[in-house]
Image 1 (cartoon, helix red, strand yellow):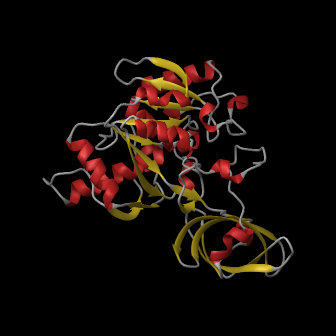
Image 2: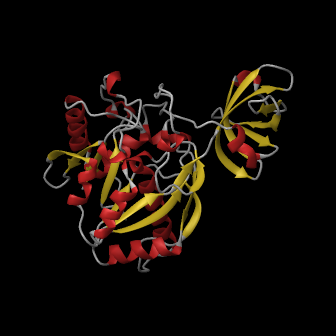
Length: 348
Protein backbone atom coordinates (compact mmCIF):
# COMPACT_ATOMS: atom_id res chain seq x y z
CA UNK A 1 0.00 0.00 0.00
CA UNK A 2 1.07 3.54 -0.75
CA UNK A 3 -0.06 6.86 0.65
CA UNK A 4 -1.20 7.84 -2.83
CA UNK A 5 -3.66 4.92 -2.79
CA UNK A 6 -5.67 6.90 -0.23
CA UNK A 7 -6.11 10.05 -2.26
CA UNK A 8 -9.45 11.37 -3.49
CA UNK A 9 -10.76 14.58 -5.05
CA UNK A 10 -12.68 16.89 -2.74
CA UNK A 11 -14.11 20.21 -3.96
CA UNK A 12 -13.01 22.98 -1.60
CA UNK A 13 -16.57 24.17 -1.14
CA UNK A 14 -17.40 20.94 0.71
CA UNK A 15 -14.94 21.67 3.54
CA UNK A 16 -17.20 22.80 6.38
CA UNK A 17 -16.20 26.17 7.83
CA UNK A 18 -18.79 26.37 10.59
CA UNK A 19 -20.46 23.76 12.81
CA UNK A 20 -24.01 22.57 12.19
CA UNK A 21 -26.72 24.11 14.35
CA UNK A 22 -28.01 22.37 16.32
CA UNK A 23 -25.21 19.85 16.70
CA UNK A 24 -27.32 16.79 15.83
CA UNK A 25 -28.76 18.33 12.64
CA UNK A 26 -25.69 17.26 10.65
CA UNK A 27 -26.12 14.55 8.04
CA UNK A 28 -25.35 10.90 8.76
CA UNK A 29 -24.38 8.27 6.19
CA UNK A 30 -24.99 4.68 7.26
CA UNK A 31 -22.37 2.37 5.78
CA UNK A 32 -23.13 -1.33 6.13
CA UNK A 33 -19.92 -3.36 6.14
CA UNK A 34 -21.94 -6.56 5.72
CA UNK A 35 -23.88 -5.76 2.54
CA UNK A 36 -22.19 -2.59 1.29
CA UNK A 37 -25.35 -0.48 1.37
CA UNK A 38 -25.28 3.28 1.89
CA UNK A 39 -28.21 5.09 3.51
CA UNK A 40 -28.67 8.82 4.12
CA UNK A 41 -30.05 10.05 7.42
CA UNK A 42 -29.67 12.89 9.93
CA UNK A 43 -27.43 12.46 12.96
CA UNK A 44 -30.32 12.67 15.41
CA UNK A 45 -31.61 9.45 13.75
CA UNK A 46 -28.61 7.49 15.07
CA UNK A 47 -30.53 5.86 17.98
CA UNK A 48 -32.68 4.01 15.40
CA UNK A 49 -29.60 1.98 14.46
CA UNK A 50 -28.46 1.13 17.98
CA UNK A 51 -29.76 -1.60 20.26
CA UNK A 52 -29.87 -2.50 23.94
CA UNK A 53 -26.56 -3.94 25.06
CA UNK A 54 -24.43 -1.90 22.68
CA UNK A 55 -21.53 -0.06 24.30
CA UNK A 56 -20.57 3.35 22.91
CA UNK A 57 -17.11 4.59 23.85
CA UNK A 58 -16.41 8.34 23.81
CA UNK A 59 -13.15 10.27 24.07
CA UNK A 60 -13.71 12.91 26.78
CA UNK A 61 -10.52 14.87 26.09
CA UNK A 62 -11.00 18.63 26.01
CA UNK A 63 -9.20 20.97 23.62
CA UNK A 64 -6.78 23.29 25.37
CA UNK A 65 -6.02 26.87 24.26
CA UNK A 66 -2.78 25.62 22.76
CA UNK A 67 -1.90 28.43 20.32
CA UNK A 68 0.29 31.15 21.83
CA UNK A 69 1.50 34.41 20.31
CA UNK A 70 4.44 36.27 21.79
CA UNK A 71 7.79 37.90 21.17
CA UNK A 72 11.40 36.83 21.45
CA UNK A 73 13.40 38.49 24.21
CA UNK A 74 15.54 40.08 21.47
CA UNK A 75 12.49 41.23 19.50
CA UNK A 76 10.34 39.72 16.76
CA UNK A 77 6.94 38.06 16.84
CA UNK A 78 6.62 34.32 17.41
CA UNK A 79 3.89 31.68 17.46
CA UNK A 80 3.75 28.37 19.33
CA UNK A 81 1.35 25.46 19.04
CA UNK A 82 1.65 23.32 22.16
CA UNK A 83 1.40 19.62 21.33
CA UNK A 84 2.17 17.55 24.41
CA UNK A 85 2.77 18.40 28.06
CA UNK A 86 5.81 16.28 28.89
CA UNK A 87 5.96 17.41 32.51
CA UNK A 88 4.87 20.51 34.44
CA UNK A 89 6.21 23.51 32.54
CA UNK A 90 7.83 21.39 29.80
CA UNK A 91 6.13 20.98 26.41
CA UNK A 92 6.61 19.69 22.90
CA UNK A 93 5.56 22.43 20.46
CA UNK A 94 5.53 23.62 16.88
CA UNK A 95 7.04 27.07 16.50
CA UNK A 96 7.21 29.93 14.00
CA UNK A 97 9.52 31.23 12.66
CA UNK A 98 11.47 27.99 13.03
CA UNK A 99 14.81 29.42 11.96
CA UNK A 100 14.61 32.03 14.73
CA UNK A 101 13.45 29.66 17.46
CA UNK A 102 16.56 27.64 18.19
CA UNK A 103 17.76 26.22 21.55
CA UNK A 104 18.58 28.96 24.01
CA UNK A 105 16.12 31.50 22.60
CA UNK A 106 13.94 33.10 25.28
CA UNK A 107 10.45 34.47 24.67
CA UNK A 108 7.44 35.95 26.43
CA UNK A 109 3.68 35.76 26.01
CA UNK A 110 1.61 38.82 26.96
CA UNK A 111 -2.07 39.33 27.71
CA UNK A 112 -4.27 41.81 25.83
CA UNK A 113 -3.10 44.62 28.10
CA UNK A 114 0.53 43.97 27.23
CA UNK A 115 1.43 42.42 30.57
CA UNK A 116 3.83 39.48 30.47
CA UNK A 117 1.96 36.38 31.67
CA UNK A 118 4.29 33.55 30.61
CA UNK A 119 7.99 33.46 29.82
CA UNK A 120 9.74 30.57 28.14
CA UNK A 121 12.84 29.17 26.51
CA UNK A 122 13.60 26.78 23.66
CA UNK A 123 15.43 23.77 25.13
CA UNK A 124 15.78 21.39 22.19
CA UNK A 125 15.12 21.18 18.45
CA UNK A 126 13.87 17.74 17.43
CA UNK A 127 14.44 15.99 14.10
CA UNK A 128 10.78 16.30 13.06
CA UNK A 129 10.85 20.08 13.40
CA UNK A 130 9.17 20.31 16.80
CA UNK A 131 10.75 22.02 19.80
CA UNK A 132 10.96 21.18 23.48
CA UNK A 133 10.15 24.37 25.40
CA UNK A 134 9.78 25.47 28.99
CA UNK A 135 6.91 27.70 30.12
CA UNK A 136 7.12 29.62 33.39
CA UNK A 137 3.43 29.25 34.29
CA UNK A 138 1.47 26.83 32.13
CA UNK A 139 -1.43 27.00 34.58
CA UNK A 140 -2.22 30.39 33.00
CA UNK A 141 -2.69 29.16 29.43
CA UNK A 142 -6.41 29.97 29.65
CA UNK A 143 -5.46 33.64 30.12
CA UNK A 144 -3.43 33.96 26.93
CA UNK A 145 -3.94 30.84 24.81
CA UNK A 146 -6.18 30.63 21.73
CA UNK A 147 -8.27 27.70 20.47
CA UNK A 148 -6.19 25.95 17.77
CA UNK A 149 -8.64 25.41 14.89
CA UNK A 150 -7.39 23.21 12.03
CA UNK A 151 -5.64 25.02 9.16
CA UNK A 152 -8.46 24.29 6.68
CA UNK A 153 -11.00 26.25 8.78
CA UNK A 154 -10.77 29.93 7.86
CA UNK A 155 -14.01 31.27 9.34
CA UNK A 156 -13.79 32.68 12.90
CA UNK A 157 -15.50 30.61 15.60
CA UNK A 158 -18.11 32.67 17.45
CA UNK A 159 -18.32 30.27 20.40
CA UNK A 160 -15.22 28.27 21.35
CA UNK A 161 -17.43 25.64 23.02
CA UNK A 162 -18.59 24.55 19.57
CA UNK A 163 -15.11 23.05 19.09
CA UNK A 164 -15.60 21.02 22.29
CA UNK A 165 -17.81 17.96 22.77
CA UNK A 166 -20.64 18.38 25.27
CA UNK A 167 -19.02 15.67 27.42
CA UNK A 168 -15.44 17.00 27.23
CA UNK A 169 -13.79 16.75 30.61
CA UNK A 170 -10.01 16.40 30.68
CA UNK A 171 -8.03 19.21 29.04
CA UNK A 172 -5.08 18.21 26.88
CA UNK A 173 -5.92 18.02 23.15
CA UNK A 174 -4.76 20.32 20.36
CA UNK A 175 -7.65 19.19 18.14
CA UNK A 176 -11.18 18.09 18.99
CA UNK A 177 -12.26 14.44 18.76
CA UNK A 178 -14.65 15.67 16.10
CA UNK A 179 -16.95 12.65 15.76
CA UNK A 180 -18.31 13.63 19.16
CA UNK A 181 -19.24 17.17 18.11
CA UNK A 182 -22.60 15.90 16.79
CA UNK A 183 -23.89 14.71 20.15
CA UNK A 184 -26.20 16.77 22.36
CA UNK A 185 -27.10 16.01 26.00
CA UNK A 186 -30.61 15.11 24.82
CA UNK A 187 -29.31 12.68 22.18
CA UNK A 188 -27.09 11.00 24.77
CA UNK A 189 -30.14 10.61 27.04
CA UNK A 190 -32.10 9.03 24.17
CA UNK A 191 -29.26 6.59 23.49
CA UNK A 192 -29.03 5.54 27.13
CA UNK A 193 -32.81 5.14 27.32
CA UNK A 194 -32.49 2.40 24.67
CA UNK A 195 -30.29 0.37 27.01
CA UNK A 196 -27.05 1.40 25.31
CA UNK A 197 -24.15 1.73 27.74
CA UNK A 198 -21.90 4.76 27.42
CA UNK A 199 -18.27 4.67 28.52
CA UNK A 200 -15.55 7.30 28.47
CA UNK A 201 -11.84 7.13 27.80
CA UNK A 202 -9.26 9.89 27.39
CA UNK A 203 -6.80 10.29 24.56
CA UNK A 204 -5.29 13.73 24.10
CA UNK A 205 -5.41 14.40 20.37
CA UNK A 206 -2.05 15.54 19.05
CA UNK A 207 -0.35 16.75 15.91
CA UNK A 208 -1.01 13.57 13.90
CA UNK A 209 -4.66 14.49 13.48
CA UNK A 210 -3.63 17.04 10.87
CA UNK A 211 0.03 16.24 10.13
CA UNK A 212 0.41 15.12 6.49
CA UNK A 213 2.16 11.88 5.64
CA UNK A 214 5.33 12.96 3.85
CA UNK A 215 6.28 9.64 2.29
CA UNK A 216 4.46 7.43 -0.21
CA UNK A 217 5.70 4.39 1.71
CA UNK A 218 3.10 3.92 4.44
CA UNK A 219 5.34 1.56 6.37
CA UNK A 220 7.93 4.30 6.93
CA UNK A 221 5.45 6.71 8.58
CA UNK A 222 5.84 7.01 12.34
CA UNK A 223 2.93 8.14 14.48
CA UNK A 224 3.54 10.59 17.31
CA UNK A 225 2.60 9.37 20.77
CA UNK A 226 -0.56 10.68 22.45
CA UNK A 227 -1.29 10.37 26.16
CA UNK A 228 -4.26 8.16 27.13
CA UNK A 229 -6.12 6.85 30.14
CA UNK A 230 -8.67 4.04 30.59
CA UNK A 231 -10.19 3.65 34.05
CA UNK A 232 -11.31 0.47 35.80
CA UNK A 233 -15.02 1.04 35.18
CA UNK A 234 -14.64 1.51 31.42
CA UNK A 235 -12.32 -1.49 31.12
CA UNK A 236 -14.88 -3.65 32.95
CA UNK A 237 -17.76 -2.47 30.72
CA UNK A 238 -15.82 -3.22 27.54
CA UNK A 239 -14.54 -6.61 28.69
CA UNK A 240 -18.07 -7.66 29.68
CA UNK A 241 -19.47 -6.58 26.32
CA UNK A 242 -16.83 -8.48 24.36
CA UNK A 243 -17.28 -11.59 26.50
CA UNK A 244 -21.03 -11.52 25.86
CA UNK A 245 -20.76 -10.82 22.14
CA UNK A 246 -22.23 -7.33 22.35
CA UNK A 247 -21.15 -4.53 20.03
CA UNK A 248 -18.51 -2.01 21.04
CA UNK A 249 -19.08 1.17 19.05
CA UNK A 250 -16.26 3.68 19.04
CA UNK A 251 -17.15 7.35 18.68
CA UNK A 252 -14.25 8.63 16.63
CA UNK A 253 -10.90 7.46 15.36
CA UNK A 254 -9.11 8.71 18.48
CA UNK A 255 -11.13 6.44 20.77
CA UNK A 256 -10.55 3.63 18.27
CA UNK A 257 -6.79 4.08 18.36
CA UNK A 258 -6.81 4.14 22.15
CA UNK A 259 -8.91 0.97 22.50
CA UNK A 260 -6.90 -0.97 19.97
CA UNK A 261 -3.59 0.17 21.45
CA UNK A 262 -4.75 -0.92 24.92
CA UNK A 263 -5.89 -4.27 23.52
CA UNK A 264 -2.52 -4.82 21.86
CA UNK A 265 -0.76 -4.12 25.15
CA UNK A 266 -3.09 -6.49 27.01
CA UNK A 267 -2.58 -9.25 24.44
CA UNK A 268 1.19 -8.98 24.69
CA UNK A 269 1.40 -8.86 28.48
CA UNK A 270 -1.49 -11.18 29.44
CA UNK A 271 -1.42 -14.13 27.02
CA UNK A 272 -4.27 -16.53 27.59
CA UNK A 273 -6.05 -14.36 30.15
CA UNK A 274 -9.71 -13.39 29.84
CA UNK A 275 -10.57 -9.91 28.64
CA UNK A 276 -9.39 -7.66 25.84
CA UNK A 277 -7.95 -4.73 27.78
CA UNK A 278 -7.19 -3.45 31.26
CA UNK A 279 -7.30 -0.12 33.05
CA UNK A 280 -4.14 1.69 32.02
CA UNK A 281 -2.55 4.98 31.14
CA UNK A 282 0.45 5.85 29.02
CA UNK A 283 1.32 6.85 25.47
CA UNK A 284 -0.33 5.42 22.35
CA UNK A 285 1.37 5.44 18.95
CA UNK A 286 -0.53 2.69 17.11
CA UNK A 287 -0.87 3.18 13.33
CA UNK A 288 -3.87 1.27 11.93
CA UNK A 289 -3.96 0.49 8.21
CA UNK A 290 -5.93 -2.00 6.06
CA UNK A 291 -5.17 -5.56 7.07
CA UNK A 292 -5.26 -4.75 10.78
CA UNK A 293 -7.24 -7.18 12.98
CA UNK A 294 -9.54 -5.19 15.26
CA UNK A 295 -9.66 -6.61 18.77
CA UNK A 296 -12.21 -4.30 20.41
CA UNK A 297 -14.07 -2.05 17.98
CA UNK A 298 -17.02 -3.52 16.07
CA UNK A 299 -18.52 -0.30 14.67
CA UNK A 300 -17.47 3.31 14.32
CA UNK A 301 -19.04 6.76 14.27
CA UNK A 302 -16.66 9.09 12.43
CA UNK A 303 -16.43 12.19 10.27
CA UNK A 304 -15.11 12.39 6.70
CA UNK A 305 -11.33 12.68 6.74
CA UNK A 306 -8.57 14.33 4.72
CA UNK A 307 -7.13 12.57 1.67
CA UNK A 308 -3.97 10.54 2.31
CA UNK A 309 -4.41 10.83 6.09
CA UNK A 310 -3.82 8.26 8.82
CA UNK A 311 -7.49 8.66 9.83
CA UNK A 312 -8.66 7.70 6.34
CA UNK A 313 -6.41 4.64 6.50
CA UNK A 314 -7.88 3.61 9.85
CA UNK A 315 -11.47 3.86 8.62
CA UNK A 316 -10.48 1.95 5.47
CA UNK A 317 -9.11 -0.80 7.72
CA UNK A 318 -12.48 -1.18 9.45
CA UNK A 319 -14.84 -0.87 6.47
CA UNK A 320 -12.58 -2.07 3.69
CA UNK A 321 -10.96 0.41 1.32
CA UNK A 322 -13.25 -0.28 -1.64
CA UNK A 323 -16.44 0.25 0.37
CA UNK A 324 -15.11 3.30 2.17
CA UNK A 325 -14.07 5.03 -1.04
CA UNK A 326 -17.47 4.20 -2.52
CA UNK A 327 -19.01 5.97 0.48
CA UNK A 328 -16.70 8.97 0.06
CA UNK A 329 -17.62 9.33 -3.61
CA UNK A 330 -21.29 9.16 -2.63
CA UNK A 331 -20.67 11.85 0.00
CA UNK A 332 -19.08 14.13 -2.61
CA UNK A 333 -21.90 13.47 -5.07
CA UNK A 334 -24.50 14.21 -2.38
CA UNK A 335 -22.72 17.38 -1.22
CA UNK A 336 -21.92 16.21 2.29
CA UNK A 337 -19.84 18.57 4.46
CA UNK A 338 -16.31 17.32 5.20
CA UNK A 339 -13.71 17.41 7.98
CA UNK A 340 -13.93 18.72 11.56
CA UNK A 341 -17.21 20.64 11.34
CA UNK A 342 -18.62 18.37 8.65
CA UNK A 343 -21.10 15.51 8.52
CA UNK A 344 -20.75 11.99 9.88
CA UNK A 345 -20.85 8.32 8.95
CA UNK A 346 -21.69 5.22 10.94
CA UNK A 347 -19.66 2.18 9.87
CA UNK A 348 -21.31 -0.97 11.21
